[in-house]
View 1: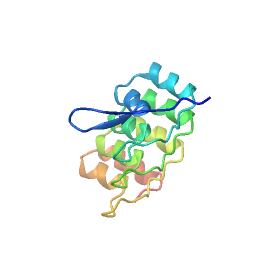
View 2: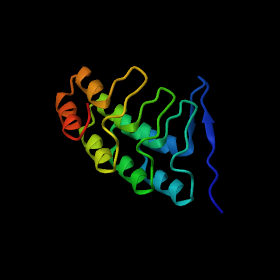
View 3: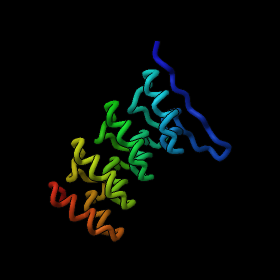
Length: 139
């Protein structure tokens, strides 16, 4: 029998899935327990964020690696069409960017305004990340 995830809504209206909450609070122990119960590694919250998207945006490398080990989708987009690679690049998380690229994340993917992960990294001043992304096929 698979574990059924649940959604938690805070008083200010923010929702989180069980897996997303473990990712958000960098709780690797709970994340592993939840994944072992068979929860969908690509489940999303109200904003379309997966646990991988959340962990990538916060730079939680161990969480990112564990989610990828369980088959997390590197190309899953949130409601703003951002991928985990896009948010990691925009927040300056070089090691997360490298791991995502090594797991097949597409560095040339674009969001609605046409920006790529390299574009957002450059805009935010993370020139080393932008250079890496361009070197790996990003525009």
